[in-house]
Length: 178
Image 1: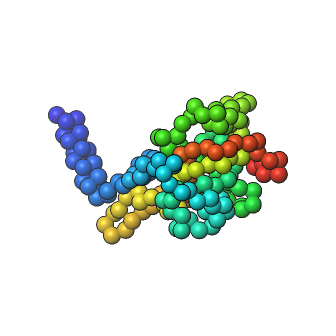
Image 2: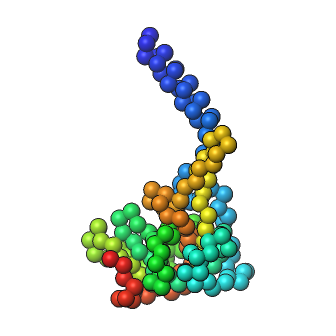
Image 3: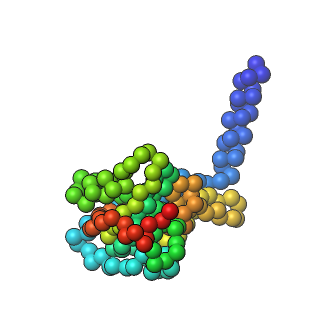
């Protein structure tokens, strides 16, 4: 008799607490309300330096851009950076429309997965993707809004969702992050 009562109380308390906060985003690799990737053959995609993107995130938020960066990949890491700007705060995600079977995609996969399973690898890439330069709303509680970032443990300020790879090259030695 006591167990069903405790279970009922627990469920009721959970419902009350759940009603107090409204979750808006739950998966940082696929932001809620993210627009589908456009047909790239029908739009003019601006080329923007990576340092410009992360220096002016509001200006490029939710825009499709072409940029050159280094993708750093390993255990709990899929990060974009550039040697010319000392920023390591952009999560690399892949759009549902990303074609992993292209020549460049296969080349990138080989470069990022070489070595042992705990190794971190990188490649210099020219990519087209949607830049998200504003944090996501995690939930609202009364009159306060709480935000979260992107990627592993929501610790990245920005995300670039890759739609297309234009070029893949080995990371230049002077740009390798250790």
